[in-house]
Length: 191
Image (cartoon, rainbow, N blue to C red; front, side):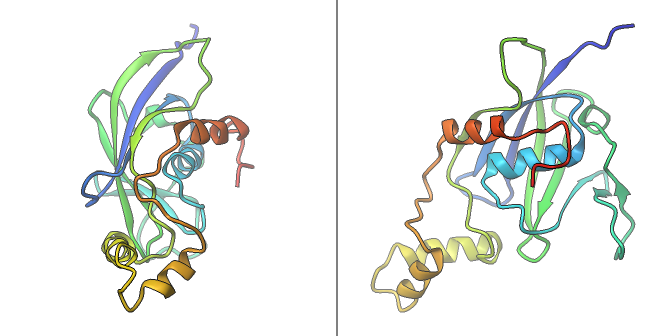
């Protein structure tokens, strides 16, 4: 029996972001969870500098660890289609346990494979990814308030910390897709 290739249309939204910070992307249904993590890092704009995990129905999936504080499942060989089964199925992705960037993942559609399309591909989104290590979503909103006001006592130090102009509205799908195409999601050598 020949395997039917399917494409999953995924929407990922950063929890508690208002207005929502989100991305929509297409990915092959047989992508393994470690590669899905790398794809999420790329489409969202994270730097893969912290630990991460997926959770579904109270079970946690991540890389095998030497010390675990709670029971986790090794996700190394789990394919996305074994994790999300049908349209509107959901799970969560957490990045950086200190800042706790939680994301909701929704399988929006199951589509036929298009041989003329390169996968993965980011098709839509809104807003820039928050900077790493800014204190989670609430720290991010505090940072935005500070950098909007050049008279704020912390303005200069926050601008120095950012090291470059930060535009919370910025999103460049072309740039994201160029990064996605440069990476090999068939192996674990991306980062």
